[in-house]
Amino acid sequence: MIYRQFLSLSKILICYLFLVPIGKVFAQENLAHYKKVGIKKLKKKVKVLKHGRAHENGTGKYPALDVLSTPPGKIGFLSFYVFDPSSRTYQFFKEDSSGNLFNPISESLYLHSLHSIKKSFSQENMKFLLPKDYLDTEGKKQAYNDFYKELIGEDHYKKIYHNLNKKDQRTCTAKGFTLVPANIDYHSKLLSDKLALLLEKLDLDAALIVAQECFTDHHYTDIEYIEALIYGKNPISKQPSVSNEDYYPSMLFAGGFIDFKKSILISENHHNEIVTVSSDGYGIILQAIIEKALEDLNENIGI
Image (cartoon, rainbow, N blue to C red; front, side):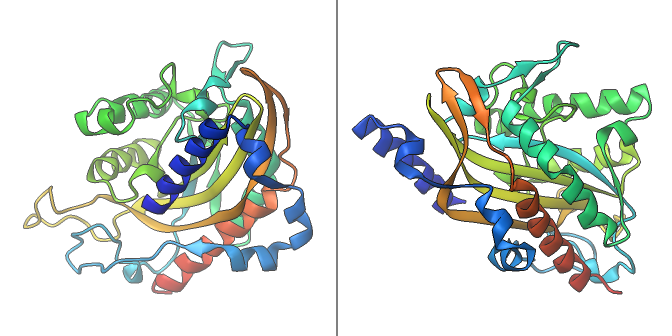
């Protein structure tokens, strides 16, 4: 995470010093290139998030996956968003006919990957649900839409997200999604507590969160990093002897990412307007990441 933040700062600094668009300096390829690479080679590029030591009493940040006999039953697609350390990507948002805000870059990436995401989970015989599938009551819709506001309301998160989406959290998400910024701190106790409550209210066993880090200037947006995270409920129920502070009710079950060595050109911009978005090829990349994460999950559960 620190390494990525250093690269992020370096790129912004260089572009300011030389007054050159980020895309022209750093973007070397486009997403369509990866369609030719193929899923097998792409999976070799995926890095899986490492698991820490799990405790028998269910305490700590890491899940005791070996106590599970099967993977989580119902997995909900909880959040899909772009993240820009320079905060410029959030300038680019649109409003649909109902007045809801969304990010056109996120929307394009999401639409180009949905088929591949569904395929990844169906291959593992997992029930994968979109927001429109699991938000089937007004109470669930309310809990989902209020999640980010409740999270951001805590002082700790206010400090972290002080410049994130100054207008609305959906300015960085695809249509119909709320923001669950798990990529900031995978093992946050606050996130664990809030996410467990949300999973309970939505009647889900686990959740998928997809995030991508981008860089944006007035001319281009480049994609730097893509990750998929699978969160689930703590496999070990809380015992009376365990304190709330030591118990994480939801945990990161598995995750994978690709950190591109060369920035990938994803959109051409004109001031505060996106002219074109090039998402073709994104689906197979995300498919490789999710499949690698699911393989890691299956290797660690006690089947």
